[in-house]
Length: 107
Image (cartoon, rainbow, N blue to C red; front, side):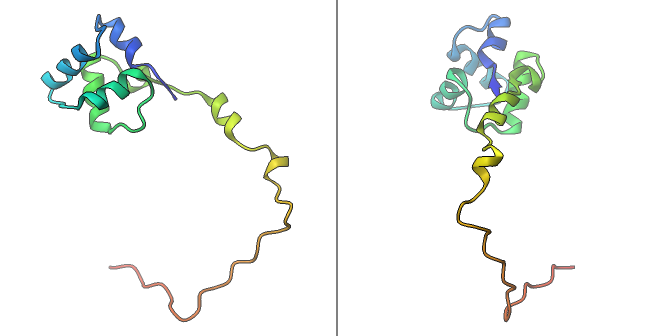
């Protein structure tokens, strides 16, 4: 995914992360300077849906405006079929577990 926070913020006249952080705080989302820095500088490693809701409300946008899929990167990270073949032979068979069967789910 490509993270477009700075572009969407710039479209709204927000040029500094401190200004964005104040606007988020006014909307009820208090975040640390470090977290704001990671959001502002590049792709955040994680983001809560509630945080995304506030970001979208402040920027008057949809989540799809903040994130753009990059299917080429997914395909590039996937091993080719030739690389996926294991030279050691087939994997060992899975043996059943005897003695301690799994418990039944609660009713």
